[in-house]
Length: 384
View (cartoon, rainbow, N blue to C red):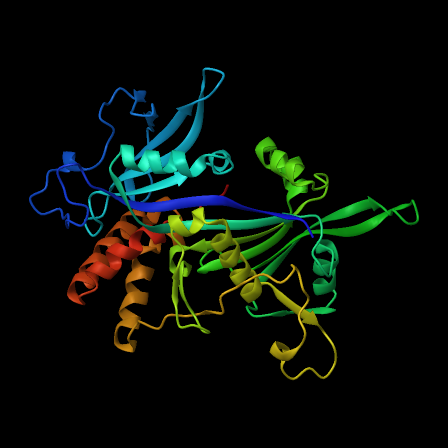
């Protein structure tokens, strides 16, 4: 079978280390002026850097960072193309003041020299990689090995197939009066176009959907269709299986070897390793068996084979949270994210107080370093 593996979303957490600082030198807010935090070397709102890159400061920031810069690069037509967004100057004192989040725009991820350009952006700005905040890996195909994607969704909806693993998911569909292709008559029907497992708060989420339909109805992306054409896919009906992984899911233990596996930029540059990571999550989170009567243990049932046999890790959890600290960490995170849980202008002040209280609890329970590592991952996920 033919399929195309791509990175469709990438956001990384970095520290700005100016030339005078050592890469591993700890940086704190104590006796450190605010203007030491990263910003482009000039401030006219349209800046040329070493590439040259152009930086444009937005009139607004994000929930965790006060400054948001749009980064663009020159194109062959003499204009500028978007390349990345940089969030800088964290609001919270718990975060390293030189923390930045860099999210690369979708089109840039499909450039043949993306990693050369990404490495250059980081080196030009003295950014030191600390971890991936979110990465989406996706496989685009017309059919799976043993079953068509639409037949898989319809079989699951009709209870002919059972999902192995997480029980929380969602079906996506259109309904209305439609033309029946067999009878030629119009009648009411339901057309499935997606199936997902996990939620936006999960460490990883898997989603099968009709990408051709999405590009047709929600905005075209020619650079994606070009990749399909080069691979020989029928661009009119491409289904995408996408795994969205947050920072908490980027590190796991292989049960077979005991090896700790971490998704980093170096991992993402290696096509073989990237394929192994994708199929690890696909095997773990998107497995199906036939729903026959009398099943006592579905994990022993033969699975549908979506892809030809590919190397995978047997993914397991890393148990490094002591039971004595688990409640404090859950409580700190819930307090800090109060504004995400309850919307409305009337609770804005209370949400800020809750964040300050969360920082104080972290300090009192020796969880300051843990909270500093987790804060970049608590940013509410954004839509594409």
